Image (cartoon, rainbow over all chains, first blue to last red):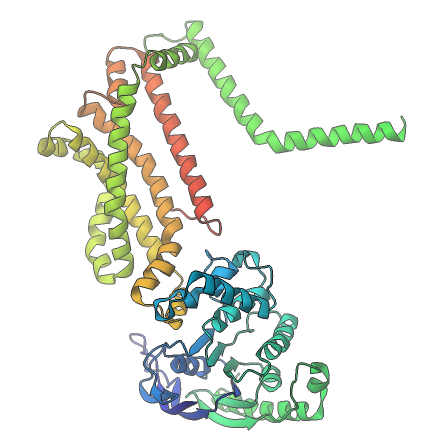
Length: 265
Length: 273
């Protein structure tokens, strides 16, 4: 369980500039185990910063994040990140990238075990036979598959995904959403998924947390009650009246928030 | 003309085209060099230049064969090679750690950078009289001059490699709980390696220059000494022989370093001077 209580964060002002609005202001939220939760909002609403705070890469100015009863003071192996820009090490093959987390002191694993775990995870994400390819030889979608395999290698309870499909073209993006749900299957893993695509959030999530901007804060939380597994008949689900109703409702709220924050767009 | 013949003719034509296309650069270069050497040979033989001041390609070639055949060149190659290798090795041992420290710590960079930049920009050779004054005419002086000529380009390239690393990769390693040492060894070092190797490649050129200059003044052996003596004795064939050996060494080392760079870092080739 992830408990976020009264998190407030701001970045230091550049010299000579006025202090910027808080990136996050008084954000509280509880994320249950096994839940797929999305952070949805416009750019600059602090959703990515909150994800980093949950991981421990950023420490909030005030407030706290508690994961499984322990306060977050830095990254931990129970949480893995998937990044928008993939962030693969260019000098490592897909296989060597996928075993990166297991090589580190914190959970030193034997070479043979690392290779087998990395191989399994590459199979899982659909990259069987691509282990020896280098990042520059892979397409964007394939790179992110490696990124996901790398994140899974440490068997994390929490998978933190920062706009993981944001850099992919729209068709590959939809395909990756289906593959992600397929991959997660029945695992009781908790996913925190940052996105600014309304459709993506509805299709993937159990719960959507909507963020507003200036200051970054939660404006609403929506439970998504659509049949599962959703990847089996994704076209039908995306065309269903319930799906459309969710989209309408969420867009109305976000549109209102955007117009309030900056009427010029 | 039958269709068969037509195909054969056009096939031959396209073969010619591709052979020419593929080797165009090499053929042009070779032709230019051959013409240049032929003109040079002719100019000397026809008495257009005084042979006392300019040898001819054929005489240089003869000399080249001779000095290798009688083995008289080896002590000189050995003497120069020793200074070059020692100076290059010391430059690496000093330059890489300083470059890494400058790339990692702003304080160290701000402290050291003025000295590095001033030394890099100044003509190192100007320090030779001072070095001789301090260290005498032995090998120490020559090695010191080589190090002064080569170390700064290594420092600068290492620093650029370390400080230009993609911060997101460091953050990624941190997210997987890498400690400081692991960040340095598994992210920063491999990311900086192509820059460091490019620094080595650029340093090699400077090493050769410094070896020769140092041997002009502070040596009794070596290719620089040989060239200087040959000049003093109007032996231009021997002089060119020394130059050719140095040029060959420079080209060979440079290509070897390039091959090493491409082999180690095929995803990127970097290099600044």
